[in-house]
Length: 107
Image 1 (tube, rainbow, N blue to C red):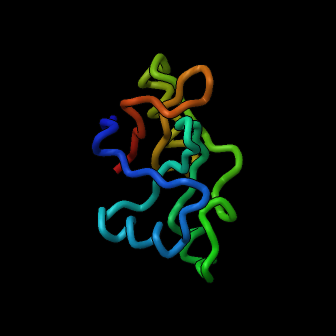
Image 2: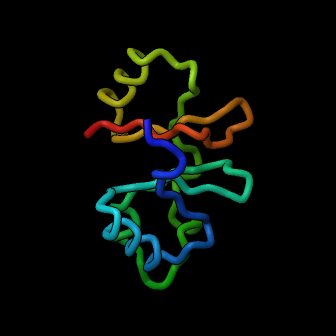
């Protein structure tokens, strides 16, 4: 899992251009989209690349991301990563807030 200090996140009001710059700068392919309370939704770079024309991330993000909890069995997490289109999963608490250690990924 990635620690909060190393986790790259954006908000729904982030422009697509800013998000793309962050993806390139940090050499990542996606990131959690959070609100002020660290509640999240998820987005992938492919959707950003298709619709950049000055839009904000909130227009493009996935409305119902696949997430796991800290207590989710690692075997189940691995199965989800292998059996779905997702390459990373965000870790949330019972309120749907992004945890301090979050974002499991399949490299």
